[in-house]
Image (spheres, each protein chain N blue to C red):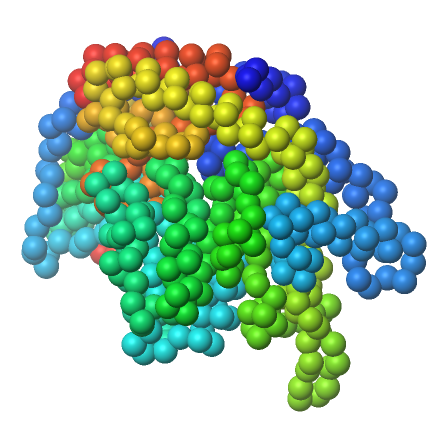
Length: 402
Length: 143
């Protein structure tokens, strides 16, 4: 398969000489997505669901068509696809509505140390408020969630299973299908954080059989401020809205209100209209390239990078067996914030820190890590420049006494 | 790499590797101030003891990058035994220098001059600041 050559699709990569290795935090935006959102603001920048005039009709149909396309992208139905501010909002919505209504003392919620803060802190709060208990899947030596380890914490008490699809620090893919099947045998509900999966994998919520699944636009070539919550219709039907206000209501009385059906009851206020339309364009962009090609491209770059990193003395890679484009590593004895400045000088954008996953950083027993994440716009030349800088950084920090 | 070499001067590396006045005291004469930068994990605690308008002692502890850790050590040496008002003035000058704001160049910053290059690395200003901000807070609690 030919390597992808997509730099020209991304204006920022043409304006600057950046090697962008921070997609796991936020991806770059292709011209087609920028233009699609620009088109909304230029030609029909009005509210949805409200105006009875042509422009508003156009905005509404573009917004709802976006939902239809995004629903199809994950094999969900229209009613099961709720727009949110991002994956964090979506995961909070599940915890604060479904979780608050269905958990009590003695119940258990299974989470993991691989979770992004947005998928463990909401459950931590809900557990405190309801008297339920958080249970952590023990990670194996490499830091993975395994089906066997999951089985060891699953019990009759398990009511919720909240796990990541792909870890944002280690890049590991969770064996979701067997885990979800086991959870369902116990009658538990499964919530999946797919923020790191949606940019890189075909997601089929029917095959997975997950109960809830969330992802963000800005990690998959889409805009910021938009995310998606998928929920099985029967569950969404029985959940109360988290926020009340305009648009989500049906009949308003002085002391009571009836609300619309899903997905609308979860979307009060003016939604992120341009962002929803932009996200649908991002989905089109990814589908046009094809996930098979995207996965193969990332894997090739990641394999090259890991192989070369492993050959440099004084570098520790924490996830050499990762199956995705995310590499967590450190220069031994050099705090990642010292190291990152070196890379920044050659316009290599990478993440240094705990990546919103402090539990995992503690599991790794380090202060923080560097993280390089590869995506469809990265090239062989990027890997080469990255490795050259790692070597130079190692020499530099050794020379000044680290 | 010229800028980076300027930044990681001998002074910074020396204080990073051999921090002075490190380790906290369990002593109620000291006022303790803790600052953490949750985005990167820099975590600094500074203690000050003030008597008769003079900073009699400064202690510090914490974890983080070389810029953060060394700056706590540098300030403890520079500001110890100074009049409180002078120490605060030096702090203001230092913080202005970091963020490329006007400051009084007549004020002798001694080893803290090593951080002058930080202004070329805006993403690191916070690393070089938090120990000094903790110092400032702990002193202001006492005046």
